[in-house]
Structure formats: structure tokens, C-alpha cells
Length: 340
Image (tube, rainbow, N blue to C red; front, top):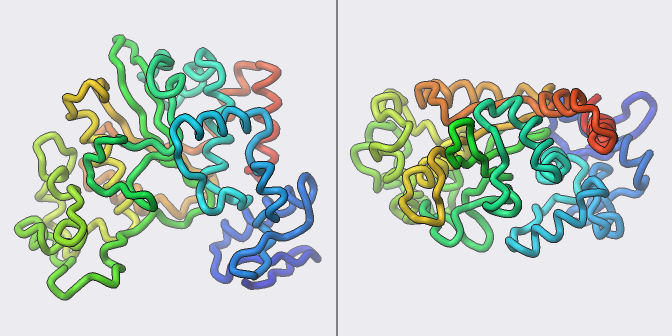
């Protein structure tokens, strides 16, 4: 923990933050102090001002009040876990729920707003998932990536089922980022169980012998199987050109989510009747730290149309155009909390 003094106020923050993270944390803490409490929360007995104290976390803040009940009902239905730091003002899970659930409350409004970024979206498929969406989505119980356990695994922050303009049923997987400076990196590369035989370089060696990858040989994850299938958007020659595995760093999370989308689209199971499955990243408009990984990843998959990214303010701006009183109130609240 490090104390930052900014404009005459002291803030207890994590030690290493980017300039954007400092600005965002200070803004979120000021909002917390004005609307919730001035008391800090604690992590490993250390106080942090961006954390909420237990009694406030018990009220499910910082979720938007009108969607709290819907969030809890949805959680009962699908039994997904709240993130460890849901009670953090910079919680990406909370920001994701705060962005999408108020829109999805009305499928007609949702189609209008979400269609501004997902241009083939015509209608929310309310007969699928839970009125057309699912938070913390994965292919339960199939687990085609073979990486899901009680504590970890690949999932999308939210999935939305929809009909396109041709009437086809599609699925849209979305990863939401708020203050993160990078996507989740490779856990296998950092694992204590990794041995010298688990070589991450060169990438060509892994393509020729998948057992070199810890994820493949020790964990039995199906990442490389799916990557090299004909239905995959990945070009083996592009991967082969890397001196080391391209999925060690921030592209790891993008890779895994794309593999989930690829597997669902290729599935013949009636549980996954989606003709096309897309994957997106939505990010805070002032957080440019993620762009290098996104740009490199898009190039790696040949700018395949199953991936695209957009800033969260595109949805807010589109919602304003509808001029619905309830939506306007939410938009003002969201902007006040997350934008500065």
C-alpha cells in the first residue's frame, strides 16, 4: 500500500499503478466518499480506500441499485461466483454488470443500443440463456476447453444471444475491462509445476510438439487442439513466426475466449444452436493500455470478423439518443461513477 497525496487529499492505493489507474482510482474513491462511505476496506489487514468495508459490500455496492435484485436472481439461477473484488470501486465485474444489465432490462431498448456496436444485432433472443443473456458465461457442463474447475477457467464476462437481420441465432461473448493495464497472462508459464521440458520457445516447436506446452501436457487443456482445427481463426504460419509462444502475455486471455467462441460455433450439440459466435472486448475510453495486445492479436488472427473491440461510452452515447427517463437516469449515474 502506498499513500498518494493529490490536491490536498490522501489516498491509500496499491503500490504500482499507471497514470490512468491513479486518475481512475482517485475519481472512484472521491465518488465513494461522496455517496457511500469514507471508511476504507481491508485486504490482508491493510486498508485501501478503493475497497468497500464489509457492511457496504454486503449491500452489493457498487452495483447500480435498480439492478441489484436482478443480478442476485440471475446468480441464483446460474450459480456463478462474484469476483473476489466485487466490493472494489474499480471492480470490472461490477462495471460490466452496471453497463449491460440496465440495457438488457428492456429487450427492445437493448437491441437499439447494442446494435450501435454489434451492427448485425436485430433482436435479443429472450428465449435463450436468461432473457437473452448470461453473466460469467461458459459452456457448462460441456467444458470443451477442459479448463473449468471450481476456482478457474475460461469464461466471458457476459454473453448475449441475439437474432441477426437474416433471422439467424448468434451468440456474442464480451470481456469487460475497466482499469486493467493488461489482459490475463499465461498461468502455465508461471506455474510452480512447470519443468524445463515445458518450453515456450520457439512457437514453431510447440506447433510441432504440443506436449511442450504446460497447459497441454500437465493440465490436459484443449487449447492447442482447437487452435489447430480447420474451424479455428488462427493461422499456424502466423503463430510459427513468433520466437516464443505468442500466448504467454496479454494475448492469452484473448486466445482462450476466442477458442471458447470457436468451439461453440463449431458445436453440433443442440445446447449450442448458434450459427455464429463472436467475441468482443469493451474497455474504458481513456484506458489505452490494452491496445497493444488487442492490435497484435487482431493481426495474429488476420483481422477475423469474429473479434472486435469498442469503448463503453459508445453504448452510453447511444442510450442518450433514445431519451427514455429511466435510461437517462442510469446514464447519468454511470457517467458520474466511471467517467472523469
